[in-house]
Image 1 (cartoon, rainbow, N blue to C red):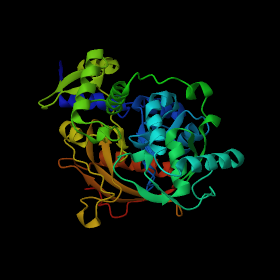
Image 2 (tube, rainbow, N blue to C red):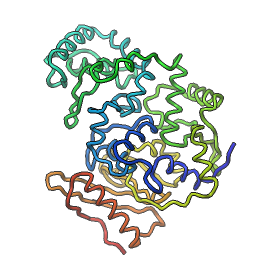
Image 3 (cartoon, rainbow, N blue to C red):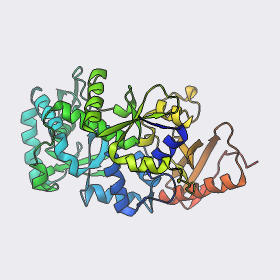
Image 4 (cartoon, one colour):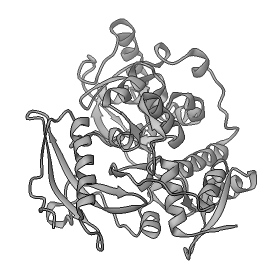
Length: 404
């Protein structure tokens, strides 16, 4: 087993993520390339200074704009919105891998009274009228149903019939998201937008354990290094510790993943075997890359395992958006700040689209980080990029204390 230092682990993860040195990912093609590498990026509808998926790409992809992601999703159809790590965005080429997931949704949906009849009614309307949302589909009333996107198998509730049937057809793979208007989702027939050979492609996974191992391996690649421990990095994957252990054993035996020992950590870390050359370049000691200052998204793939980030980067992060105000340590929508191979603090920006003003409400630096003129200049450049990204022409430091 290779032994690496925490510093080497940091550099490897950041190089893999495209967050250290010159930009590896450029333009719309770079955005697609990164999502393919990550497997999926989480979608979250909250838009304080850009939505989570947009901020994830903005920090990595040179020249990225929000329209690029919109085009990849709804014009090029190279990406799809679908469940993975909760609601996520992932490459449409991975559609066949989720065949068993869609089949399970189909079987679950048939257990609810009235759903099959409502599906026929909804599909007739969509074929005749095109994309619909739950507000425009003329199906009224409620049904006793569950949210297929968040199967627990333990709860059901009465919910609006129009929304329920659309989500059921969407999780079955019959519909996909045609576009979004704000947070409102409009659905249309998947067969109209995805290639027929892709829709008809056989499941590459021979059984459930193979599908599980594929997903575990994909999550390892999304972060760069992961350990075999309970973690939010596995969110959306239905597995217990025994199943997770078996997936790791299988992947290691196949040679798909490799273990490394990082410093004095109690658990080994794993990387995808295809990333070994990148790790070896770090171990050679030749990595001397110009640092960049970037603001990371709250649900950035690099941050999926917060205990791992604390162990490797010495940085504690909690997304406080759902924390009561009185219990928040920082703020409602706070972004980690990365500079070089260190997470140096956090920033709370807010975009006002009406006045085209980006306000920095606060900046917190980690203990031992001095706000020098050089660092202040780097932060200001990143703030200006974020302002431009949000269509803002004015920046306001708000209550941020002046430089020392």
